[in-house]
Length: 131
Image (cartoon, rainbow, N blue to C red; front, side):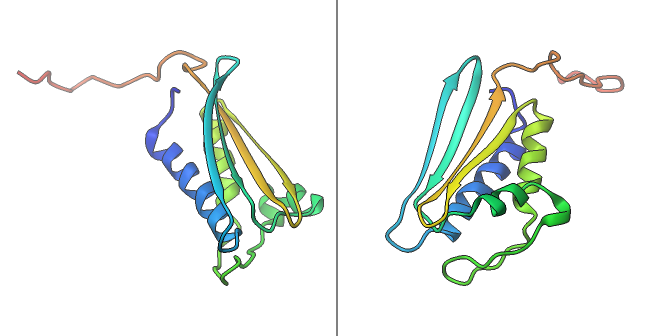
């Protein structure tokens, strides 16, 4: 996929970290990636505590962000998922979540395989070519 590797790494680390934080010992966190309709589709699925529909509806809204303790008492700011969604959307992608309380969650994001508006412009004025 066409993407800034640092930003996408941050998204993956956040999603996997959240999966681990909200999955009790003995549970699983699974990461999958596949091509789907000319896009890269990545999912992070866990067998953790899951969320209610009302909690899912609040996830990506800054004014509703709140911290939840993980299964081992870990704390977070409640802002990580908001930032992840913003980073994915800046790459022309989408992010969604499915969750069932008591069963786990599945976060999925897609990215275009090529830049939607062509390659990014790179300023080369004043840069000397290496010999």
